Image 1 (tube, one colour):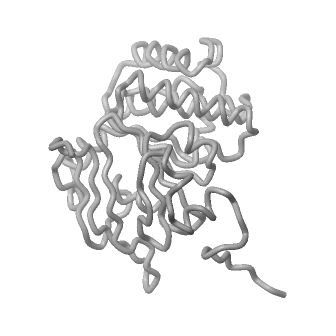
Image 2 (cartoon, rainbow, N blue to C red):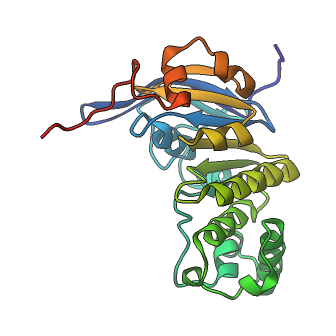
Length: 259
């Protein structure tokens, strides 16, 4: 065991909405420079975990530490300073339709850091080149791009401010298998280039295997398995085994409405 402080550390994090417990004591940590992928079915708490780390949602209890510092109750300016360390690739790209690509990519630089437009555009063009898009794309609007190109623009935006921590929310959703693999390769390259710590959530096992150093599975609001990605095929956990092999039969029972 190393004595280094984890980049991100969650202990006994709980979150309920009314009577519905979504996070039921999440324990997980990510070392600096590591890529953690959280897998699990729909509604198991993956997105809520990310939102609690970001502070978009406030956890009901537990501890959320970044670099050993408690962040769960941060407010105002202190929260803004913390968020400046994060980059985020949203599910479905989530680009601003009314802004050209370069303004999408440099949005944080111009809004939060008050960077002049010329400098921001230069950085945007450079970040676009890192995800395989030419300078000619910078002045296009999101509606003029394919789904795969939109996802790459979203990745360029996530890395635009050279974040120390990057979150990827279902990065390959809606993409064909070849474009999904392109995005996975770009994620690995960008995270490595930045030396960033990455946390991804997905139910796409091909994506998880490509971008993870470690994989954690969440089920019913708890982490039920956590280990190196190469160990997941012999986890000894029947829930994990069913999920990664996509089997209908097993301990995880999907709720199917019967008419």
